[in-house]
Length: 322
Image (cartoon, rainbow, N blue to C red; front, side, top):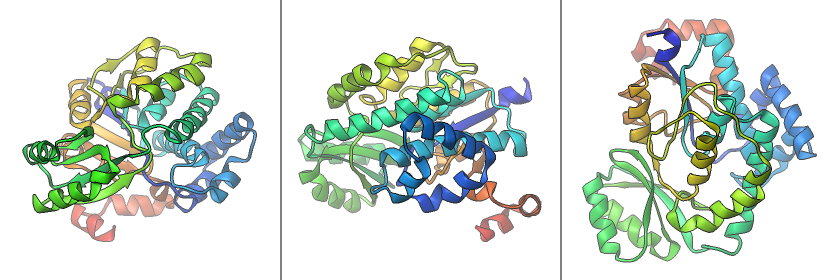
């Protein structure tokens, strides 16, 4: 088995993203600057200026900035850490990054796609499903969650299986307080409520809008390395599969444990999580399955000597230094 086969690159889902988190890296890193310049041409405005001025954690500019920063961090990992991945995947938003990294779409079309989807999200949820939110929570095993959903009685869907006891559920906002109370009563920990919601079977209208408004003018190629779909762990190896995976992400839940298991079946031993990540690369199912390196803007901005010194420390000292 080659070293490349044993390496995987994982692109995280997008959390709340602010200029303070990415701005310095986007300005200082040469690949990030080049990608930002390409984005400026496609978007017709200065991405970094709009990102800095923008309102909301998931603005159009924030989404494009997350895309290009994740790609630039993967490039940095190749240059500085010797990453040479034989397989890739992306969780939720990270799927857009994965198909771009794998060469199924060029950067200009990736920016067009990301901005177009952001606009579709705004348009769709301005009039549809305004009552639905997606809530994340931890320390809740599947059997406890199943019981709580049964007690709820009304509509709800699991939008993301993150780990054995960490999930995201979409439900009407009117039921959110009751749901959080039941999670706490079961020993769980409510975390974050996302608006707009994602990954639900009822969002077929959003899938159709994106397919018509955004994907109608895009061309996909066969990826240069296998992509693992985050909905079911399937291996995506052709252009049709790429298109289907991206569109299915609107209506199918993320199943991250299945995704990680598929990476292992493909021979991955080490994983490079490229992008700002507070979740998918850090949960137990990921860290217990792969030797993980978190490739973040903070790491990339450290001087080489500081990185080498930290890498030479015992593991306990590294944890204490975080």
